[in-house]
Length: 183
Image 1 (spheres, rainbow, N blue to C red):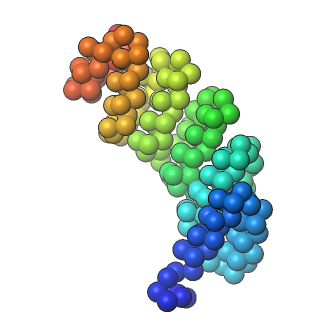
Image 2: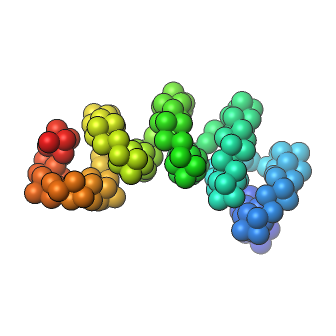
């Protein structure tokens, strides 16, 4: 069913997102439960990322994680954007180890971590002064044939410069060798 060529999922996601912006997540959840689950509209990842983002922005990361577990237990799949939102939310409440644990959980699911997710966690590790773990994760990402993005390189270069190793940043980026970054 379409309304003037616009799919109902798009209209509903806009309404849910409006409630998120108004910090009215209870209304957003009500719409989701009443319209989408009861009437059987197809779920799309945008709904889940909107909910996760709304909860994380309110500082309710634990609720977002609980919602994530409930949704996954009912057979729904999250997308990479949703997982990146959760990882960022975990970082903002100081739960770096939980962010890494979430990465490991994602790896075991059908949604595989992408360069954005890896780069987010690498950046978090550097900010928490866990450089060895960050370099190890970078190495892991590259070994899985996930190509670093310009943002990934920016994180590496910024960290090297802050550690007084600016001359190593060019080598690290040009040959894509994580061992150069560690020295």
